[in-house]
Image (cartoon, rainbow, N blue to C red):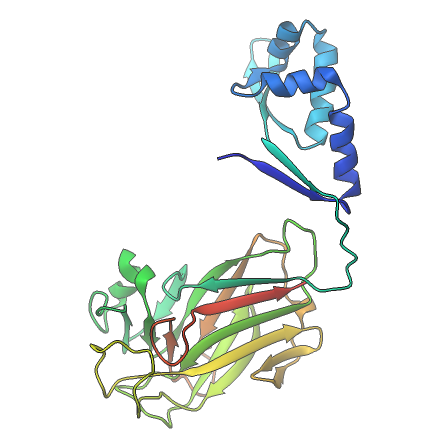
Length: 306
């Protein structure tokens, strides 16, 4: 797969370095030479009939422009630099971005794509077609088939997901994070008056806790497959967490003073954890609904505004 370097007109310094790197016919020949093979600087100098010092200077310019990689390896007379091409395509957006209109990145995540979990019976996973492994078995949560989950439940604990951080490569600061999920409490069978304090953590920072009123099973979920039994959890509440510059809200009500500035966004992924804090008053578990269970045809969704 081709490795692409994407830049915008606002990336003044990287564009200037690329322009400088490509202004020399010798440096263009070096890039051509590295099309399919990696070479030491001495080999590049020999093939292009350059003094080794000149070849090394050209390599530094290409390296500064992010066009090639160099890796130091031991040689017979000290260390040697092995050079390889870093980017195959360069995409330059000349259209300016005035920065007046906020950009939004949306990622829909299957509920079975969790990267970590802590669960306890009653617990289990159901796909569109059947239970995955066995009910009340923690091993269900480590089966490869869990990726097909459309309903996940546990009487306590949490599920953890990793979403892509759209702002990481753009060097932008998020202004607002929104997390959307259909969720409810988890009682044996179901109880519509079963409270559960459900918390959301973003990059290990607890943003807010919302008290879900119950585990809903008095009517069937609108999307539930025919095989799913009555007398069990049927649907949840579509719940929205918003972390902004003014604090955190759940379904429009401010519940926490945690702001977007309190969340670190230094990594290329955003870690989302949802479940019960062991110190909460009501540890009533959770049911998390996918696009083919419950009332709403969607998976969990993370939106990042920047």
